[in-house]
Length: 242
Image (tube, rainbow, N blue to C red; front, side, top):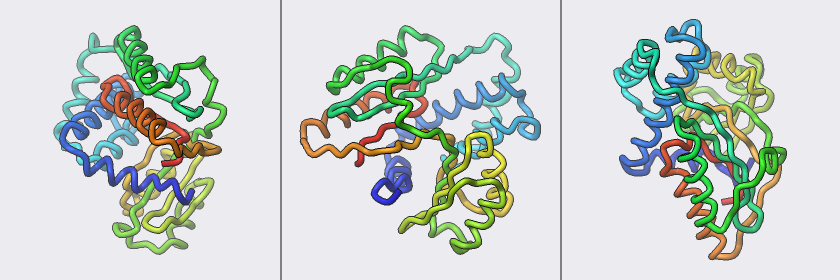
């Protein structure tokens, strides 16, 4: 994983302005609504909701905002129904891009996603056109500075809890899990008091594309920025080697 520091990206995103914070709160708010509708409002009986709450706390979402989101989703039978739609496509020089969305208006979202790709010289493809180049994994990133455990101790804890892989970078540890084991591994680390910089089920590229042309780099950034600004977009995955 060296050269692809997810931790550096996390720090960069957290240092961004309040607009970015507003966006992450919108994203998490929708995930709370979906988790509550699927498994009920009690985190004790809903592992997906526990995972989203942990993600909310990692992003400094206030507890009362989290509670309000849960109550709203639980109490409002007629509340907005979000649909999960994934788009796949290509950026400049064949960079593979996957876009996860949660939307209450498919036409709006499809138009916005296509527009983002077009403005960056890319194009949306058919379902499955790039996802085969990625592995779906639970990924937990731990900031070394925040963690009191040493690497070996942390690795044993993670593997005993069901993790598939453990790696160490200069400034962080990375734990990878099968998507089905993600919740139990995250909860085992949480129980042991391990602070997590991020914990998500994500898409990890099998290979990376390097861009050397300045114009291509501008274009890929254009696509990613436009997708990042769209409230319907929950997550974007790509294999550009930044």
